[in-house]
Image (tube, rainbow, N blue to C red):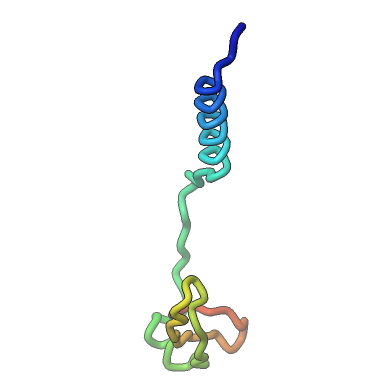
Length: 77
């Protein structure tokens, strides 16, 4: 079987693209949300406000996050 340069590059490109796409993965599980005891506005009133930045690009946008004092988890951005 003769393999040409063009055929080799086509095959490696197709295999590389397939590997790249297969590593993305898709999460098809449904996301569940649970109701809280307090409404969101009531929780924001008693929460601690923390400032931080977004690091997803080089701009560094400022964010104000509402943090639950009991658990230390962010629930509103």
